[in-house]
Length: 254
Length: 277
View 1 (tube, rainbow over the protein chains, first blue to last red):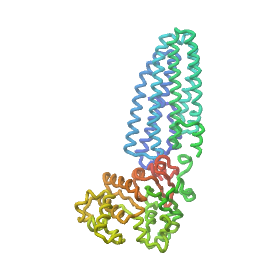
View 2: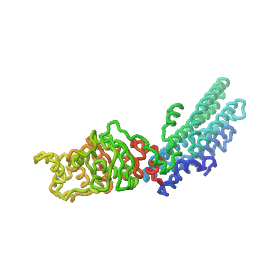
View 3: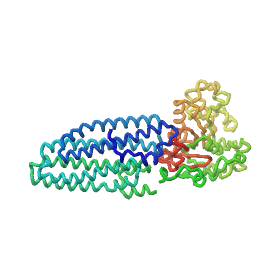
């Protein structure tokens, strides 16, 4: 299993939630296990996103195939963590922060799994783009823009997973606040691609493929924001979905 | 919002802090203000203030020895039976001071009934168990009226259909869950306003427990209920308000839905999630 240091350090998570303070040591272990599984899944999804993106940008068919194949692992992890959480809910009837942890985990892994699906879209489009020699053509300027957006989304995902690992509400809020950057960049790429399509109708197919990749990045950005909302819920007990930034700040401050 | 990372589990801090959450009810049936309880020199309850909301269930939870049962017993002066026990503060039932000198504790206990942990039917028939209170309080001398009181009380306690053909048989012959419902019927028979329950289901199996919990939910339509329970899940299931006691103090009180998902105080959090206190 692939894990990355920045998402798998227990600093913050275990201590802030006192996961190791239950009278039942077995319960401590179970929650620690859930935490660790989610961090592993997060690291795997992050790798999928990065590899998928890299496959698109470098016309790397081999890497694309690998990403598509590895999505099964992401799906398996989702099922495994879901089942594990169900068992804990049934046996322990957790309350308060323990309950919020499990609820946030059950929700988080859905978003992580969807991000995995988006990474598969990179893989599929990468193969088609590679066959069309898109990267070598002059019209590949959209790929530069895509790379830029991809870097931003990937960095944000990395920050979100670190925030998750450390239960860092401030970092999570920061990411929620900046979600519109992704949306704006996505609009820019779309405009660029539409222009390309109008200039050269023979490139419509490829341009659409790049559009789908950009769209996948935009979705990954949204899922990342969702993860951050679960962090706020887990730590603060406040549900900040569908709230404006002002509302979120107000609810956390009081 | 410092429940998870700032407020430490520090008892010296607890000595200074006031109850967190909300102790007030819009429609308080009972209002307790600054209650202290002493057993001789030892203080068991420290300056507790809270309201029992009318027609709602308030759960009192906390570790053993936290004073929740002692507090419950103050509410119908059951502690009067303990010589060394002394209660101070203001304890009001509607507009009546329940510790007023001219207030008859026997009449108070008709208004504020109690159900105990172990079912304790009298060694009498099912009928007489329920009729007992109505008789001693002189609610009726009329046999037909008494029959009616017994029947409706047993019905409200969800027991009538199970015992209607054997009302003359001893109450002690019933199952544990049935005995507990018989005790509830006995309490209801004198038309109380408040029912205090001290671990009413802890001696019962899950089925009998579920029946009692269902009954509590129905009873709250007519009565105000305070329940002491060691089962957090039970408190979460049956109550609308939860009060968390710790070492004779009321640490936190609030809506049950909040207490079990986002308690404010570290001690509450530790207790309901089974962490070291």
